[in-house]
Length: 138
Image 1: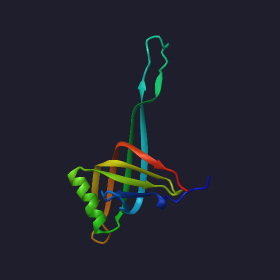
Image 2 (image 1 turned 135 degrees about the horizontal axis):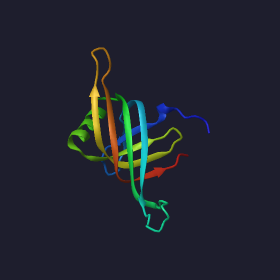
Image 3 (image 1 turned 180 degrees about the vertical axis):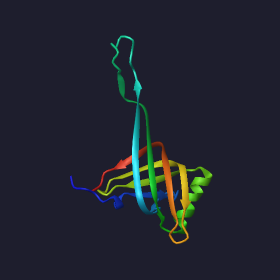
């Protein structure tokens, strides 16, 4: 499998409309996704000291982290509003091969900053709320 361009891993936020459309938040410097599975332990006293896990049970969480520069003032305002108001919004993660993952996320961490001679930057950590939808690329 050939390598994929990291710059093509995009994070988009939904507009909340009935026919929701998604817009890129900005020029990402880094975008990362992690999935953590905490399986249910079904070990019994007669398991001979061997742990037994139940497939498909337990808790799964997903985080998306992004550092970058805002695309425009509207993107900054949308993300800031979601952070201050602790809203659950729909986001879309677009992978370089055309795959997409859409889900509702809550902002766990949001920061922005800048220097006198540089552009304003931001970082955000999103945590998935509920399930999501994976769509394979064409």
